[in-house]
Structure formats: C-alpha cells, structure tokens
Amino acid sequence: MKKILITGGAGFIGSHVVRRFVNKYPDYQVYNLDALTYAGNLENIKDIENNSNYNFIKGDIVDEIFVNELFSMHNFDGVLHLAAESHVDRSIEDPLAFVKTNVIGTMNLLNAVKSQWKNNFEGKRFYHISTDEVYGSLGSEGLFTETTPYDPNSPYSASKASSDHFVRAYGETYGLPYVLTNCSNNYGSYHFPEKLIPLFINNIINNKPLPVYGDGNYTRDWLFVEDHAAAIDLVFHEGKNHETYNIGGFNEWKNIDLVKLLCQIMDEKLGREEGTSKELITYVKDRPGHDLRYAIDASKINRELGWNPSVTFEEGLERTINWYLNNEEWLQNVTSGAYKDYYKKQYS
Ligand code: NAD
Ligand code: TYD
Image 1 (cartoon, rainbow, N blue to C red):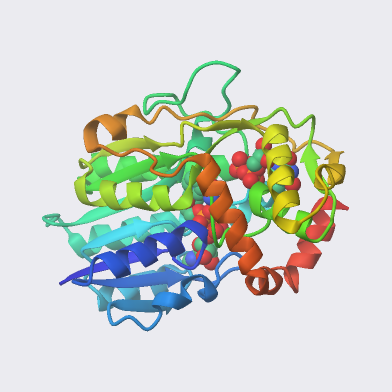
Image 2 (image 1 turned 135 degrees about the vertical axis):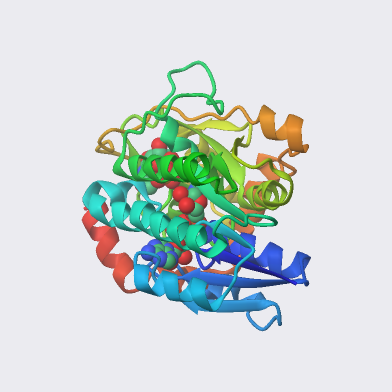
C-alpha cells in the first residue's frame, strides 16, 4: 500500500490525475491536498469522492507549519505537485500571489519531503508538474526541447521557472529523487472558464463577445487533458530520476483559427445558422508581454517512455464541447459570484 500526495487535485488537470490514480491504483491511498481557491472545486472529483482509497485535505501549501504537520502525520511515498496559480492574466494583475503559491508553496513541499525522507530516498519520488511557458516565446520556426534555455516572460511563467529551478537544485544539492515535466496548453472537461477554450465555449453558449487579444495570430500547442494525465502517470512510474520530459500535442493552432473552428462546431451543436457565433469575435487590447508561439518537441517522452497523444484534436474538441453542453450547471456554478467581478475587471 503506497501513500501518494497529489497537490491541486481539485483543479483542472489535478482532478483528472486524481481520478486516474484513484481508479487505476486501488492499492494506493491517494491524498488530494488543495486550498480550494477560485480554481479548485470539489465538484470536479465528485465521482470518486467516496472511494476507499481517496482522501481530501483542505490546506494551503504556502502555510509552512501546516505543510510540515501534514508530512509528520503521513509518510508519503510519492508527491505529484500540481497546485499552482495558473492564469497568465491574473499573474499580470497580482504577481505576488504567484510567487507565494508557485515558489514558496513549492519550497515548503521540497523542504517537507527533504526532511521526511532524509537520505533514505528508496522508493520515493517528487514529481513537479510544470509548463512549456518557462521557455518563453518561439518565433515562427522551431520547437521547445528539454535543453531550450529558460526565458520566461510573464509573472506566471517566471514563478513556474523559479519553482522548476528549485526542484532541480534540490535534486543536485540534496539528491532528492525528482522528475519534472513541462507541458503545452491543455484543454478538456472541468477547465475553469477563464482560459481561452472554456471561456469562449461559455461565451458562445451565452451569446457574449469573444475577446481575441491583439490580432489573434498567437500560436499554442493544444493537448487533451486526459492525455496529459496519462503522460503524468507514465512519468511518475517509469520516468528516470533527475530527468525532465516535455509533453505536447503536436497540435499547433493560431488563436483566431481555433476560435473560428470553435464557432463553427458550436453553431452546429446549438442548431444556429452557420456563421452566427463568428459574429461574436471581438478584437481587444493585447495581453502585455504576450508570447507569440509555444510548440513542444515531445520526442524524448515518446522515444524513452513510449508516450503519444491518443486523442485527435477533432475528437478531443468534440468531447470537450459536449461535456460543457451537458454540464451547464457546473458552468453556472463556477461562473457565479467572484467570477463576475473578475470578468468585469479583465474585459471591461
Ligand atoms: P488550476 O488553476 O485549474 O488548478 C490549480 C489548483 O491548485 C486548484 O485546485 C487550486 O485550488 C489549487 N491551489 C492553488 N493555490 C494553492 C495553494 N496555495 N495551496 C493548495 N492548493 C492550491 O490549474 P491547472 O490548469 O489544473 O494546472 C495544474 C498544474 O499544471 C499547474 O502547476 C500548472 O502550472 C501546470 N500546467 C498547466 C497547463 C494548462 O494548460 N492548464 C499546462 C501545463 C502545465
Ligand atoms: P490562455 O488560455 O490564457 O493560456 P496561455 O496564455 O497560458 O497560453 O490563452 C491562450 C491564448 O489565447 C493566448 O495566446 C492568449 C489568448 N487569449 C485571448 O485571445 N483571449 C482571451 O480572453 C484569453 C483568456 C486568452
């Protein structure tokens, strides 16, 4: 029986990882540690909350005393660390919140595992989940590899880069057995509607403007969230200690082309005349420091661990849109209250 701590398991990607681990590994006790910020929602993991191998702990990784007490109560064999402040636009408004959770919070976890595991690292593993945004922006050519120098441009990516560096440093300095992955943009169910795809699906449903930043010619590499969860499972179990793996969808889209595709599919699904939702596209002021292009070379994880995305973009998008259309109550719940204030501030 292994004790596994997953941080941020009530968020978007974390909920898919928790679900996968709870269902696939009945001999693991899975502990989901989450502060339930605006982005964390227990509805995201309602289907597994009564499983006997699932445990929820509400707590803040920034709180050092709490983190140390938690580790003195439980001797975790593995930690999968996903808890983070994750939205670039929010990081521009409030960078310090990102330093607190993404840097200090990660440090608290690193110090806790270091003192709990002491020098007996046998069977132990710290897995830090990170983003491709730490590499900064690509021009129109090339791909991010594991050796691309870090060059973060937003407070979000700077805070994630900083946490990545600390994880590596703890590996080099104290011998901490870590693995680290840098993944491209995810999409799928339970995605909070502040990020491009769920925000635009929600706005199309509600006939609201679709705020495209700048000229819309920014490019992202999109990966279905369940494929990311599968990659995380694989790296946690079979990745090599002290290694980094890039994870991506081999699936680049210019924002404006993706938005037009979303409009087209949504018109069909909602029984609207073709071209109706496209009318909602509104070009708005650009994001400061907006990275032009992200694209991942995922050949290392493919070559060394045999991972490949299993879901095509057409299928993933179809499943995602269907999920939002069938889960309007979830959407309404997460967009009530504080979301309205955020939306007004960001887009007015
Ligand atoms: P999310 O914002 O949906 O969820 C973050 C979760 O962390 C929430 O449940 C929140 O309540 C929790 N949390 C935040 N601050 C906390 C704190 N101080 N203590 C405890 N819990 C806290 O994020 P996500 O999109 O699921 O991303 C998860 C991880 O994956 C992050 O580390 C992110 O950097 C990384 N990542 C995300 C993407 C993406 O496209 N979303 C891509 C690559 C990597
Ligand atoms: P986002 O989903 O915030 O992810 P990230 O910035 O981490 O890549 O944004 C994806 C792309 O969509 C990015 O180029 C910014 C753009 N975007 C808009 O054009 N309008 C919006 O309202 C949002 C949220 C994003």
